[in-house]
Image (cartoon, rainbow, N blue to C red; front, side, top):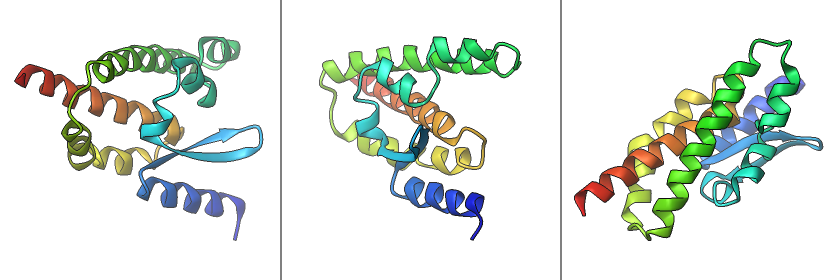
Length: 137
C-alpha cells in the first residue's frame, strides 16, 4: 500500500471516530477534537502549525495570507468558546453539535489541510450552537 493511501485511510478512520489528524515532527497524530480544543490557543495553533510566527515565515507562498486568516479566526473562536465554557452551558449543546454539524467533518476531510479545516469548521459549529443556547436562556 502506498504511503498516501495509508495516510488517507488513517485520516478517514480517525475522522469517523470524531478525531482530527495533524502532522507533527514525528509524523501524523490524532486527537479527540473536544479534548484538543481544551488546550490553550497557543497549543492549538502550534499543533496545527498555524501560529503567526509560522505562517508569516512562508511569505513567498501566497497561501500564507489564508493561513494567517485561519490563525486569527481560530483565536477568536477559541476566545468565544472559552467564554461559553466558563459560563457552564448545558451538555446538550455539545450533543447537538455532533448531530447537526458532524457533516462538516465529512465535507472537510477531502480538502488539503484537513486538520485545520475540520477544526475551524467544528469551532464555528460549536460557537453557533452555544450562541443559540445563550439566546434561549
